[in-house]
View 1 (cartoon, rainbow, N blue to C red):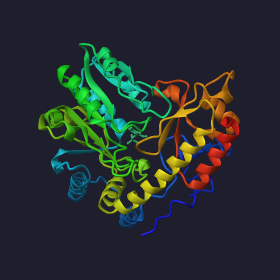
View 2: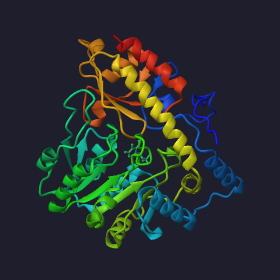
View 3: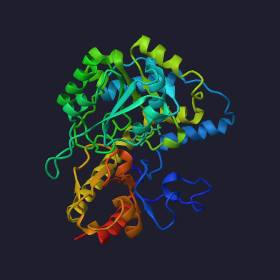
Length: 392
Ligand SMILES: Cc1ncc(COP(=O)(O)O)c(C=O)c1O
């Protein structure tokens, strides 16, 4: 089946309907938005059909998580990740960011340390403070040479651990660098986790979008089954199938004790399932595979187009992302921005009319994240604008 990833869908208000999107409205009509992590593609036709049927029912009272959805996620997990999860291990939640906060509340005590590595998707950096815990961070190793990958710095991670540290917020694969962690990196990580008696929340939201041919995601709890009792795995259809606005995610917790503790700790903090989000999640996992494969083809092409463009921007570095539709640009030595005051993100917004995400929010000023999950036409237009500013 052919899917349309080429025709731009109007998302600006008012021509996109009276449904403003964060992405297209924060910076105004003249700006091309390549910032927040949603894509400009309509979701799979099967998802839209399932939602239409649910909307036709017309009653939107409190729902239950359907058994069929739980079974569908079990099947998806077994097929894609070789992980035989059970229906009862799933706690369906209103989003991954809420789940990060809930994990902190449920699994740690006030004053405990909540650790993460930077750069990182910004909400990770705020979880500790917002939940009355102590924020702890370790920096990753930046690429040693252009094109080399970002790496986990185990020594830095260990140095950041104190007796108070209880929880590691882990992003796998990693936003913003797009890294798919190696088995060696993960082995070093879990050795620290075991030795320091930590819990891990493994945010695996981007795991369906590995870009390299033949690459296969291995959930942390699968790679290290001996640690499965310490791991909360977070999954959602929101990035893969572009469903973020339907606020539906799932915590997979194999260990019964940990699951009970998590469920008890979040009681009253979270609404019941979004009845449309649950329907969309089931349709996506049951019928979305062909669409996902087609999407991966599009994203691979966009990644290549971006690599070629960045090569023509003196002083700008990027390690090609191994996953998802986000690229992490090092603009600290961008020749075109030399001597100019202000964050590169701000300068590019003003001079190129392209909105990227500011690296400072990820813990690394001087960098910016670029979202290439858009149509080729829109991406090309935005890259041409960036070219005009950053190009040699
Ligand atoms: C790693 C990661 N976690 C969580 C989220 C947000 O998830 P949710 O919308 O379910 O809160 C994002 C969104 O970009 C993300 O990249």
